[in-house]
Amino acid sequence: MMMWKQQAFLGLIVNIIILVSLSVWEVQCATLKSGEITGSETWVVGNSPYVIDDNLIITTQATVTIAAGVQVLLHPSVDIIVEGTLLVSGTFANRVLFSNYSTLPWGSIVFESSSVPSTFTPGVGIGGYQFSETGCYIHYCDIENGGYISPSSSSFGMVIVLAEAAPSFQHCSFSTSWDIQATAAQY
Image (cartoon, rainbow, N blue to C red; front, side, top):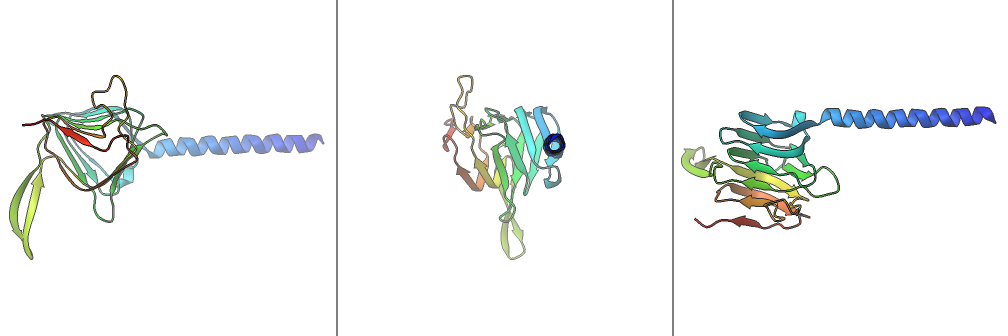
């Protein structure tokens, strides 16, 4: 009888060690981000998911490019504040995902008035006209579970906030967000 209890206890210990190891492995595979980004960064699938555990500020001189297929997971009530340039370059086949890290919703993507506005420049390409785009844009992106409402938040529960800013959004979906509208100040 004692042998059975020892084997059961040993099995329990082994299971706990495996679970802890898997949790540590999961954290080690994520790229943690928070604070200020002051230069240029490119976020790629090989370092995905990017876990933002506190507010992230893309400063006026910074550019963050998020490549196709990247997942960005945000902790509850955490915002991405864009003072510089945010380029989200998903594709039809490899969309970018912004979602919550836990069961609680994250905050907002806030485009400040200092963020670089999106502009289109016509050009001639193979087979006809093509346009190049500069400034902030979010293309082929799924934005879900954001818009956390907190008393200290200036975003009032909105997942996208435009503070006299003009980013471009193309082929984006919004789902299970607290409030999927955007607000923009008048020019």
